[in-house]
Length: 427
Image (cartoon, rainbow, N blue to C red; front, side):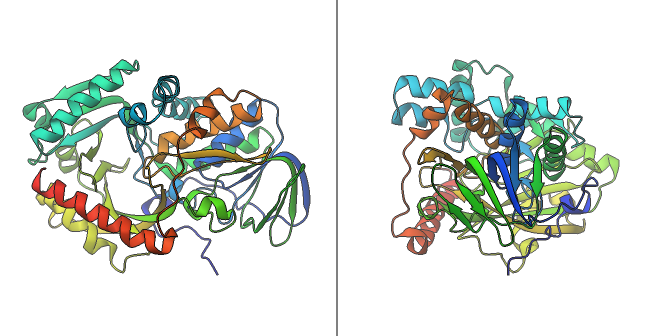
């Protein structure tokens, strides 16, 4: 049986108080049944409730149990593949729509935090760090690309400015995005769930969807109950399992690992990240890090294809942390955990509709904090009959993994190994 309690993460240990929500025991009628109480599901539910829909959310474990409560906590704009890739693969009109939406997720998060008074340690400022002139050239092109779509809160940093911003000697420069930033991700999810309930939405935990009865009025079955709805939103991402087989074939769960240090003394924390920005590097298999509100360094990286849990997470990630910050050699690691994100072959999100009334969004490919909040708005618009932005996402190609998940896992890992070698040799 799947473990449905939170992992032993720093986020779970420092989570705001939240109620234990009941499991579904009977038959519920609602306008919209949302499967999954992560960011995609909670964002969808909030936008729908704000427009007068009745909403019931089914969660297999606890609110924010999956990637929404385990991620690096970084607000990063755009998608896992940037807008230039989208421009080359779709028409100009579709690219324009997707390009202008690429910066909306962060604004939605800030609006939610302010409107519903969510206590999640929100800080502004995100930094992309370059190891080489080639990566710096990529950041210069990224700045120009994003500015074409109206995103102007960007500043290129040379080596000296970079050294004043992060105490890591490996970087030749970087790109600062002041509309980026960081949050306590589980507390954001818990705050959004409380907002859902404040508007009359219902959330059932420990209530895994085990079958969707499709038809004019779909019925979602759990072990002990059913939800009759006009619409269903499938928002399970990497934790959906095989509930919707046609979605499972086009995506692959992957694991990412995170460690958190003991609290650092004030001077050491301030020396590492003086402006308290979050950082991610420009490698294909990237590392990312930031300070928590209580001055711990949260450091993540590494990808396990097929979502197996590594035996010793600290052994994988601590060397990466010490390569960036050798000054932390004697600092103790208090927490180490893994969590799954959902990878697509194109590394672009998969959005669509099954029949007339089952909608889905999945496959953030490691770029989900901002995208999922946008996805909720786009799905809610589609249910209200405003489908232009939904259609722009739905028009992106959905490729199945060659050989399915069984053979796709080693093939994907081989591709990642190739790119990691390119990172290592700077080509």
